Every structure is written in C-alpha cells, then in structure tokens.
Image 1 (cartoon, rainbow, N blue to C red):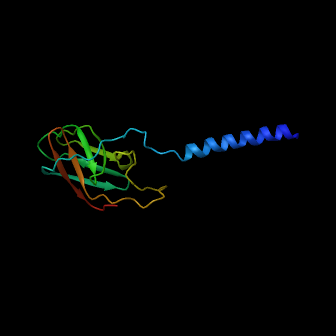
Image 2 (image 1 turned 180 degrees about the horizontal axis):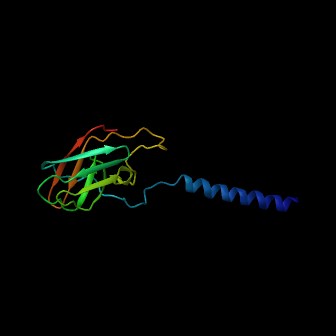
Image 3 (image 1 turned 45 degrees about the vertical axis):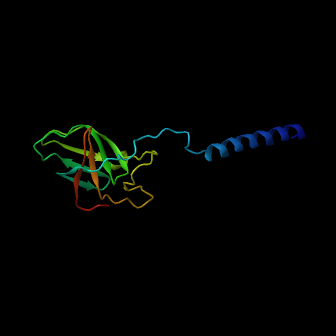
Length: 142
C-alpha cells in the first residue's frame, strides 16, 4: 500500500472514530421533556381503589360509585403516564415500563432481563384536571 493511500485510510478511520465518539458523548440538554414534572399541588385525599403490583405491571379496579376521569397516573411522585379514565367496575392493567419521568427515564420495573434491581412501588396517585388523589398500594411492592 502506498504512503498516500495509507494516509487517506488513516484519515477516514480517524473521522469515523471522531463522529462515533462525539455522538456517544452528546448530552440530553437539547431534548424536550417526554413527560410533565410532578404537579405542585397538594394531594386532596385518597380514594379506596387498590393498586396491585404483579412483577412489571400494576392493576386496579374502580370499586367506587363514580367514574374516574382521564388524567395522569403518578408512581412514587416521579414517574407518570396518561390515564384513559375508568368506569365504575372497570379494571385496567398498566406496564410499569410505560411510566416515565420528565427526563424520559422509565420506572425500573424489573423483569427477567432486567440488569438493575426493580424499584419499589410505594405511592400511586391519580391526577385529574381538578385534583390529585392517592390510591391504595397493596401487596408486595417490588
């Protein structure tokens, strides 16, 4: 291989390495938050709806006499996801990996392929247009 061709090859390798390195070291500062921050309002009370964790999912049934409107469900005052609403007697199951924080990080739900210990689920709240209410977390928390 002649000297000119070898220098061109080295230059291309350096360019590709530099691009790969700079993209790996980029920060998230320019990204838009994927979910809202935890609301600044105080919790107005609790309703008697039990949230049961089953490994990487949570389930709840509306055992109250009123329809729960759509809004957001909050886990541990940090992670949230949209809540479609829940009629009287209806149930919903949600994957904990769908819960994200304002920076786009997901709830450490665990599971078979998880590399980190799952996060404990200690508090679940429902945020609607006019209030923030607590739900009852029961059973094993992690």
